[in-house]
Length: 291
Image (cartoon, rainbow, N blue to C red; front, side):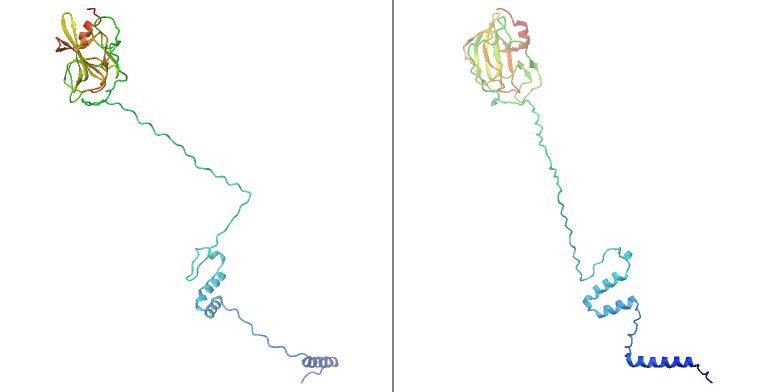
């Protein structure tokens, strides 16, 4: 059997019932709340999104979701270019003001090439040789070029240099003889040649071997002694056949004509006018004598 209410409890129950009735009549019933969505796993969301997108945009959406779901630490690998996606790289530009740019120009130097060494060589010449063939100036007939003492003199004053003595030798050129019948004296091209003694010109001509040459006959100690001067510069001798010459008088200029290997005087001394003897030995024995 239920317990009877006290008066105070009964009044309270009546008030509560009245209040509930008035509230039900005045306040409209609230709309039902939408059902709560349960969070779906990320894999399900991505699948549904891909299914909802067109096929051409699926790849881009997949990349978007992958980037959002993967932590930043996992994106440190090399970038992958998806098919159908053209990445565009935009270059950066930078403008600096108030900066002076210094440009160092390349320098260069011009070095003169080393001059080629001048090499003097001996060459074999023939009768057609034109080296030292023209006298530097017209030879003066009768000029005395060797004023030394005595009636017999050396063809040049002062010391002389012998390049090839009298006698047997190795022929210096194809047209040269191996039995040298004179002596080669080398004072230098163009040097004036003086007559060894007074005499008469027997020959003044040119020869294939001797080039420009002169033969003078002398009377010494009652016999004929002839002297021959060869390889002179063409045209340098003023002497003519039959002309008388004095000791020391100009015969011609040292040249390189005929069969010659360089400018020199080929001097011969011939006893009796034809027998050659050593001219150096003969001059050493007779130079400076008074006849």
